[in-house]
Image (spheres, rainbow, N blue to C red):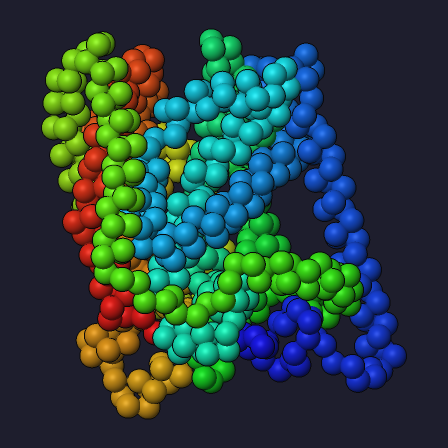
Length: 593
């Protein structure tokens, strides 16, 4: 039995919502049309496979033939460079989805692991990966000596770190706030944990997962620009890609080729939105938890084409034996019945043992770090970053507060209207997907012309890369509110503040918390590049922890860099524990549908 509903107006099929499963005879004209549709879809699949194989082969060349520090900025190379960048982005997206499923499920289903994994996730999203990118590249080069595959893995890893955290938080939130009726139904039917995951838990979190994946994909462009041209052990490397192309054009001061890079980026974002994200968001609407169909649904030309084609049905039949084998193998994970009652004494003993082991590992790491810093700089190195962190904390708080007031109402308006969603989605995707560091020179120019201090202007620079988390999650939360509840509110004449109190805030709140926590972490990370900026030979430096870390990374000062990262992680974890964790608990108790 499946708990997901078929697409409106279509009968159920082996792959529900993807193609029509009717067995009735069709007129010859419709059959002819389907033949052309099948040919188009099959040709697209073959071309996609060819491009992946071709680009994957080019990514494993030896250093003797690999691109060096020089980047060819001939505009004719941009299509190839753009394809290489896209392959890295989608490779990182696949890794992020796999990571999300495993990490979020473990945190949501194990009370003990949750106490370690969620704080660890808070730390991971706050660690400035760009500061350690050269170290990560050194490790990957050691795994693949003499091959450009090590650099490719380093670039994919950098993009992965920008995509995975908000997806993981969103899916974790969906798992811990699973609707009660779905939880009870899956238990009463005796679903295995494997079946429960694919039929109940994943569909319940699908809308938030898709929208956060789309946002993470957009944010990945920022990291890709920085990771395609890096320095390792004093040697400069540049991978073919639109990011390295843009960086070389900016360094050369060639505004014409910078314009070509920007135009290519816009085409990439719009094209990926049209061919991938819009079909995915339209398809994800079928996972809404509602009793009546919405009056308007999202549409996608690509999704309609796939639904008319028989190619997905053929692929489904070919993969069905593998799916059945996986279902049988998944039974080893047990059933989703309620866990047996555990003696309180045994539970306390288990908790104590787990706390001792986890605490011992953390304590060992802290002691080793303290010895390292004491031998080189002394423990007083933490004093300066602790004070500077207060300034960056103030910027983060202001950013999140202003973004909440501005973007939550806009996100709710968009999410409640499929027509507005169709119009706004590509616009928002372009804004969120465009690398924020491309816009820094313009903002700095405005700050210099207006005389605004970088200490205040840094908030705007940080917002360019982090405010979209709140907007996207507000849209996803509004889209997940059942249409029948909205219609009931309309019938009862509930408007204004009362509607926000009774429907909108309870419905959007869990998704907003996910957006808030990821926006907060993203703002801390963005402070590293927003508090020290250069324009026209002029360098502006704000007072803050981000500038402290950026200076330490530029000097290669590892003790101060570690101290800055440790203090930033401390601030992020403290903020999450004092504010966002409590809001998560509130969302679980009061605002789960």
